[in-house]
Length: 208
Image (cartoon, rainbow, N blue to C red; front, top):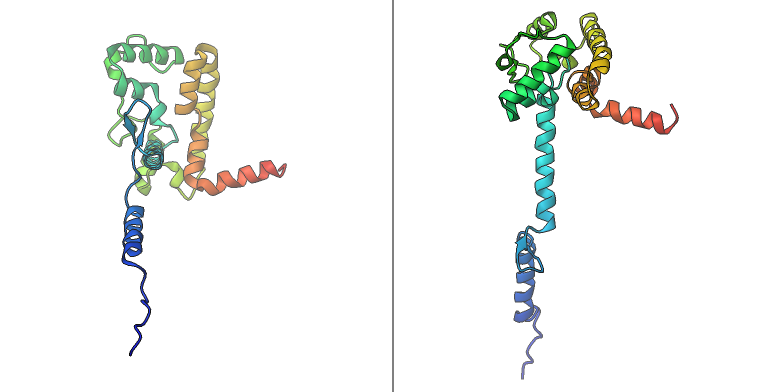
């Protein structure tokens, strides 16, 4: 009489459990139920969404750097155009008058600004002509950075900063610093990237 051979496979019930575990592992995290009975996204989904949003904002910040290093996202004129109205433009015009950048009779609606665009007027026309001739987005992407033309822009910006410190509030100075008085830092990041920032941090830790 022939003996039956032992089964080589796992019991059918165990196999079904294994398959179901594998299938479950590929699914999205289950929403978390709060004590009140409502559900909210799983923390893993929330972290992923925040990472995407952070990446989008970083890309937006990089693409809003003007040819000379000004940062449009922080410019009072740009902010007032995007989020404000007639009153916001009037306030920006008053600030520009204090800075000596506009005449008191200048109409507030003309303070509207949509960012540094090729068709817009530029305070640094020679810099803009150079950038357009080389077909680059800003001076930080130029092989000759920083050049004599740009150093003159940095000096002019520093003089404006000194004047602004005497006539502006701390809140206004903070906005102007981010928008106009960080040209060199913005362009340095465009030119040298993260490696330059990491090198500076390393030197600081080493006492350099």
